[in-house]
Structure formats: structure tokens, C-alpha cells
Length: 282
Image 1 (cartoon, rainbow, N blue to C red):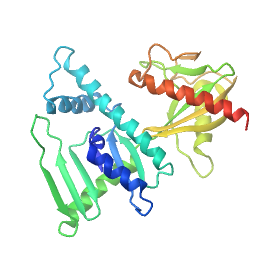
Image 2 (image 1 turned 135 degrees about the vertical axis):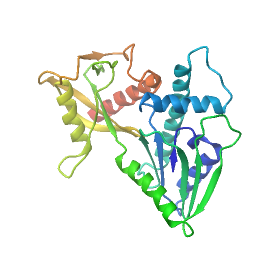
Image 3 (image 1 turned 30 degrees about the vertical axis):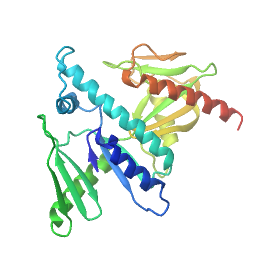
């Protein structure tokens, strides 16, 4: 399934997905690709404009770009919250997994067994977009084309690792780069046969910040990547050239790179502190 944000939130879609995940006799595999709100601005603005137009909303007072982007981010944030809920129902991710991609889609399609359902994301307000139902047996080439499109973006979807490093007082480390606000150290890392994902996160944190980090463990896995928590160690050297400032804070900084995630970050901080405290008694 390829979606551009809000389609996962439809009532019928939720009911079907949750029912299949809970059914122990159902060996389905549900994979969803959603457009990343951090994609190229023109992609997100275009999608946000389409959402507002389809609902008959005019937002000239705030400026169209601001209104379009905020509307899209709101929808995607709702999708992410829902994905977290499903992750608890299927922690192994054998039945359900959601990833983000950064190429603006022109279609919304679902592949179910031997049928392809495809519709188009029309930019002008319409009552209902046309939906086409295509049989795999009758149209194998068409079916194969859409399936390969999905597999390509599924396999190339990037997963980011974010590390929350806490000192003994419970302060967390934030970094700031050129043209970026404050954020937890984040990078694109991959596990390998020689190194686990947690070890890879450990290495990139030390290279980025110049600080040692110990006892790194997975805190939460999300549709955009993984959050890790660890104990901040001593300073080993200088931060990477891409980092302008490093700071330890008790409260979240006033200006975050992803300000719309502030509430979510507050929840993560609480979970991180609890995880570190519990690990001390292990």
C-alpha cells in the first residue's frame, strides 16, 4: 500500500488492519509507505494544499504555504501515533510495518492478493477520485509494475536513528547545526553482521558530538526510525564539523528542529529517564 498521509486514518482502514493483526490465524503482511513531512518543501506544500482544497478550506489569512504544510504535518502526525499503537499490537512487526519515503506520489494504490486498487491524487477539489480495480491474472504487467514501484521505495526508505544521551542529573544532550534548530543527535545508520544497530548508533553519536555514550539500548522504534537512550560519558574530542553547538538541557530547548513533535519528545524524555533508571537496577 502506498499512501500520502491521511488514508491510513480512515475508519474502515483502521478496523480492517487491527482485525487482521489481532487474528492469530491470519498470516497477512501489511506494509504501508507514507510521504515524509520532512520531504522537499514543494512536495509537502502540494500535498497540504490538496488536503485543504478537498475539504473546501481556504487559508489565505495565514498564508497558503504555512497553512498547507501545517495541515499535512497534522495528518501525518496522526498516522504516526496510530502506527505506534499498532506497533504495540505487533511488536515483532511481522504483520504490520510502516515506512516513510520522500518522493511525491501521483497515485494512491493498494495491492491485496490478486487485485490492485489504484486512484489518483487530484489537485483540484473533486467529490470523489476515480478508483480502478485491476486483476493480476488479466493484467500481469500492470500489476507487476505497481508492485515493483512499491518494492523499490520500500527497500530504499531511510531509517534514522536518534540518540537521547542522559547525564547523571537527567539532562539530555542536544546539538545544533547550520540552518537547523536544536535536536537530539540523529543520523542514518544501518546494522550489519559485524555491528548491531545499537552499536552503530553508539559510534555515530560519538563521531557527531565528541562525547562517549554507554549502555545504549533501544527506546522506541517508529515509522521514521529508532530512538535509543544511553548514559552520557566523558568528552573524547571535538564535535563533527557539521555541528555548531552542543548543549545539555534539563528542559526541551525553546526552538526545536521539529517543533510539531514537542509533545511527543516530552513523552520520549519521560520514557528515556524511566529506562535509564530501570537499567541501573538490572
